Image 1 (cartoon, rainbow, N blue to C red):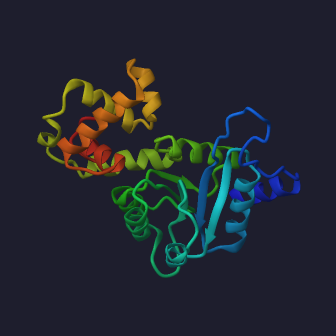
Image 2: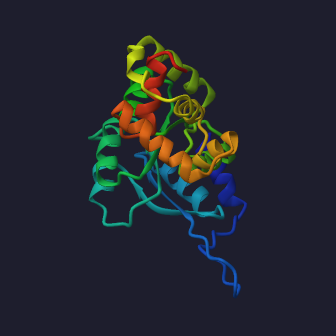
Length: 239
């Protein structure tokens, strides 16, 4: 379990992350700012300790509910770890609210159970990742970085469900007929979880060129996020 292994990290006295190098002449790199919304105190504090003890990450907020997080005056996070089952507004409903406030936010859902209806709703609402709470700490930390870089981290069993869910809700292929061959390639790699830099490396183009392709894809598909674009591609049978 994440919490148990996070507690192991605490007991091992991991050094707190340094936000930037103090050595003269070195480039200062801002840490990835992570917030947590989890109603279980032990789980919440365990995750916070794990993040705070990891170089390159900073825990900028930990909350018991969606409402508490939205009411906070804290600076905006880069990545949000969001529980599904919360008091008041649910995690799946909260996705839209958080993205309305912070459009560039990357949201990774955390759940104990593989609940198909919640998976479908959260991803359609804009979540970029979906992990089981039993995910090992090292994998969770990798997922945070992957999400921040534009990836779509998912537990393997969740990823299989996502494919089945979207195929079961197939949409007409006409929705993507106006994509160019290169845009189709970019969209396929986007669906596989590649970051902009990763897609560029696969296709031999720059990250800025990838951004231009993705902007065009969004316009043609009438979507506003990676999740929406990928869901349309899957439902149309393209991938």
